[in-house]
Amino acid sequence: MEKIYLDNAATTFPKPPAVAQAVYRYMTGSGANINRGCYDAAYAVEEQVLETRQLLCELFRGPDCRNVIFTKNITESLNVLLKGFLRPGDHVLTSSMEHNAVMRPLVQLEQEGVTFTRVPCDGQGRLEADALERCLRPNTRLVVMTHASNVCGTIQPIAQAGEFCHTHGLRLFVDSAQTAGVLDIDMAAARIDALAFTGHKGLMGPQGTGGFVLAEGMSAELEPLLSGGTGSLSHTEEIPGFLPDRFEPGTMNLPGILGLRQGLLFLRETGLDAIRRHEHTLARRFREGLRSLEEAGLLRVLAGRTDTEQVGVVSVQTLQKELSQAAFELDDHFGIQTRVGLHCAPAAHKTLGSYPTGSIRFSFGWYNTQEQVDLALSALTEVCHGA
Image 1: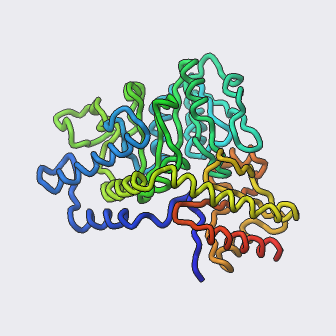
Image 2: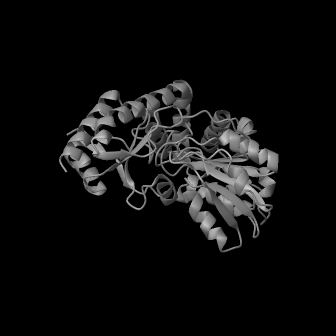
Image 3: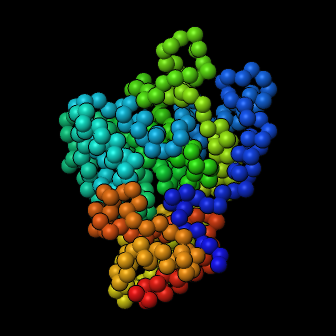
């Protein structure tokens, strides 16, 4: 039985072949660290890492490639940003659709005197137009929010949030886990002060890669969460003040970053518009195919829009069959690979009315086809009717 992978919101699969090839070439042909070795092999790897920073800076319209900081994943990026920026007494605005990569650091920071407000979103998961203004306090310092929901795919009005922050003298941090590599992101135009990204989803790179991009001047407002050797200024025990070294202690995931470089080159060659159109077409086809099951009372689609305000994520609740059983049957009987549960986003499920049971998530990527969508619809129909 052929497996059909529909879990691209967790990690894209397959990757472009050049990604794995780059990791293999590094592991078997070089293996050198950067900023340490004084020989050609190390310099060659350093040039590829620099090019990866440049590609990311170009993709997100960042101010300078030195402002691109690498981490292990977007969760680490958000922890570095939130814990490095916030101080006791600060107030934060975040959406009611956030992933735990944002919520858990904020809840943890509550113990240190930081407060936050969950700005309400509507039943489609979209930020209410005037909600930010209503939730503003005198001590509000930051807005942090996801660009698109990992549960239902709804895209948030980041540019609108950026204008709000600019008007009120606040900073804007954005979680781009579901949009980097799919949607066009212009940090300057949207007034984004820090953009957290992951390498293994839309950017097509390996797991264990991620980072953040800082607007000009943001570095001085962040206290580094980690410190250690950087290969620079080794005569001092103080943290370097310049970028990217200020936030990149220790040995980097060089195999992963070189793989990420190939993912970024693939995106540049393919074009974000083509990727966006393809994923939107697949998700729309899937939603339209679910209508008969909805009308029959066999399932519910979370935030079932079919317009351009969603990425390629569709979540459903099977109403006549327990969710985990339905997901098991999709995989075991039909080879349809999905994700079931709360997707590390209980706040989003509470907003959408799907807490505590969660949902089955179908997430489409560049390598999925319309034929696979139709097979998934057929399988889901059989599972629902077989309750």
